[in-house]
Length: 196
Image 1 (cartoon, rainbow, N blue to C red):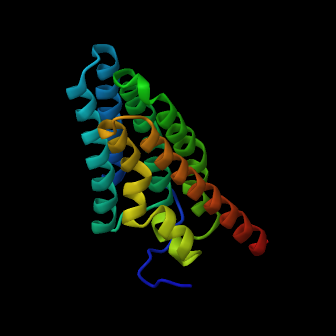
Image 2 (image 1 turned 45 degrees about the vertical axis):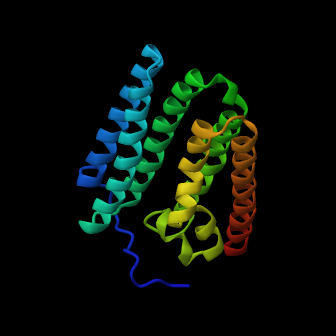
Image 3 (image 1 turned 135 degrees about the horizontal axis):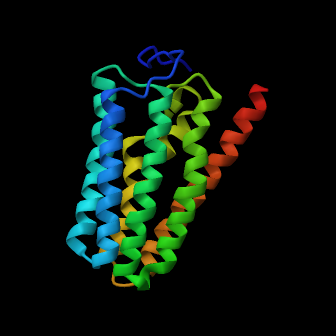
């Protein structure tokens, strides 16, 4: 499958792009606010941390596409920044809602391990970022990087932790997302073995 709209992989590495600056600012901002939320046990600071993280994460990708500054280095930087933001925001959230330890633990392991490996798997092909994984496998793309999948993978569990009366529903959702990630990893492993 070939998508002619996908940008070409450029040789060379440039970290000095506008999208990478946005990634840096949103990561430092979200991490700083999350640390402050942990120290102060502050809901407003935690909400601010998530807002900076999620808005910045959307903005850096949009700006990269608008300015035609998508790079593999930028995609990896974005993935690493997501993990820094998520780990500290979840630590703050756990302090505020300790009864939600099970769903948050499931989500954290899934996101930090399985999703990291999946997100970095684009490097095994000539893709600029995971956003173009449909060129390799449409199903894995739909499960992980389509707009609905991104919302489910990164925000749905957190929102459910905030509103659910018990840990059961967010734990079930976090487990379902984990199973999707495992199925995706199996598919990607098969794709890799077929290309060798």
